[in-house]
Length: 63
Image (cartoon, rainbow, N blue to C red; front, side, top):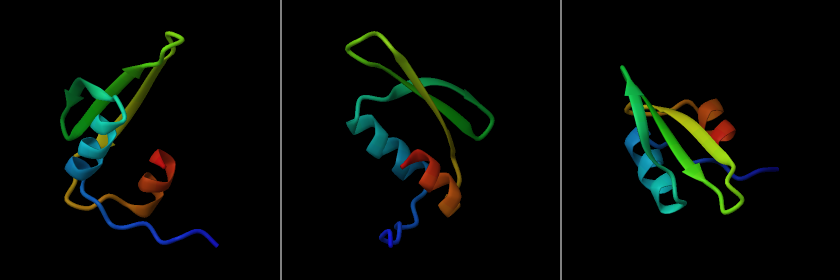
């Protein structure tokens, strides 16, 4: 059984992802794209909605 995820806002998630090397790439409306480039040169891009509280499904996908 997996532990329960804490409810987070989009801004909270972006702050956490910044600590893992993701930086702001672009924004369209209420969605922010974050990107990091690994040591091997691979690009990883995540899109995070800027909502007061993210759905648990969204948090599971990011997790």
